[in-house]
Image (cartoon, rainbow, N blue to C red; front, side, top):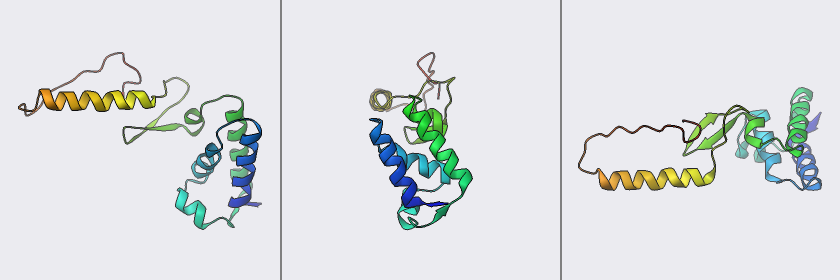
Length: 128
């Protein structure tokens, strides 16, 4: 068994060697362990089960081979909400989140005297 610290170091170095974003190592470890960043920091010496180590290393390899992080972990945060994603859906981009923010500001300004309005989003991406 390896510790959280050892796995994090392994993942960071592995991704760096393959010219991939090193922060992904931390994200993968948090997702595999189902823990947040604070837990990782406070439990660096905690030993990790073999099954979780195998999953972590598998995810690192998939990422190095070009699979998007969001597909590997199975979710993405968009506009403050967590959505499940897989290879059958598009991963929302940061620019789309900015577009949503801009549209909401314009709608609020234009329709400020209305109690409620209904909007339909057709064919513009995930549909979330």
